[in-house]
Length: 82
Image (cartoon, rainbow, N blue to C red; front, side):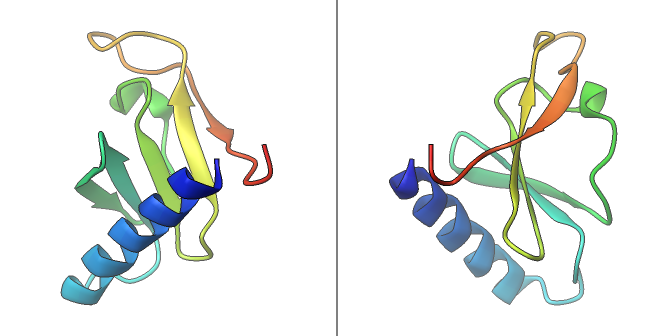
């Protein structure tokens, strides 16, 4: 799992460097690519299952449940040690 965290954090750090007007909030990542930013973590129904959200502090969340058409059911904190 640590490789996933390293990759996500590197991807997000690079995006934040190039988009400094978007401070704080969460950066949204799908299949290794940043696809959006939001000022806060919002209802997962607007994201597809498997999308990641990484906040300013480096906490990682994954959208789980649901389906691609209807969106995810919830955000779950990803434990970096598992």
